[in-house]
Length: 260
Image (cartoon, rainbow, N blue to C red; front, side, top):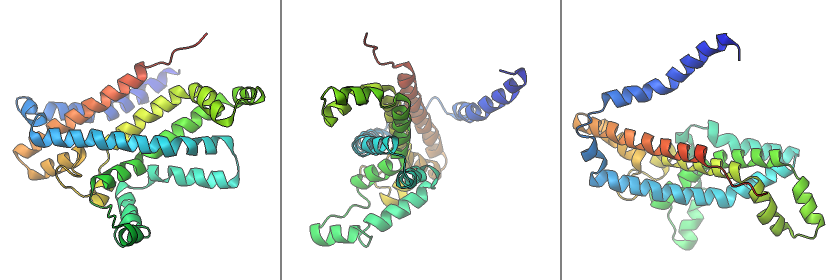
């Protein structure tokens, strides 16, 4: 690595870490334990974890087959699909929330029929929070798994198929073990993104305590309260940062066992 590149690298590191350092320096540490163990904080964190895990489950069920489709086919159609899949990455979350509202709202493209035929109303419910988190988090999983699938190639799958294995057996016994590291990292990134989701959730699910008020929404509500509430918001922000760091350290330290 050229020595002159160390300068920009250090500046980049400072740019990414100093905001967190400033947050730590600003925190009122005497009030942190009270803030993060308050009933509101516990309820918001519990809801965040439940919604995040549910969103990850949705992303795994829908995202892994989608990644397999994109990795194993290279046509104009799949290229368009890939662009659509990555769209939530560049789309402002607030725009995503509005889009979901006009799709699944009571007068939305599909929501009006759900309400009319089945009496199902999705917006401003816990299910809406899960859907919003799934919408913004799924691209992380799809991109990670597709990359792992392309790196692994199809040689082992072809050999297994020629030996008589069914497509499901090939997928379960060959494909999944080969891409397990990519699948694991994509899952963790997906969960971290779901836990930190704010914009789409706020517009599509609302900010109802105990129902849709996840940790990011509680932080936003507390910060706008001013005074002691801002100190609570900082404490809750640090808690969310700590949770994210734990997830990242777990995935960095995890390695699948290598079979001989």
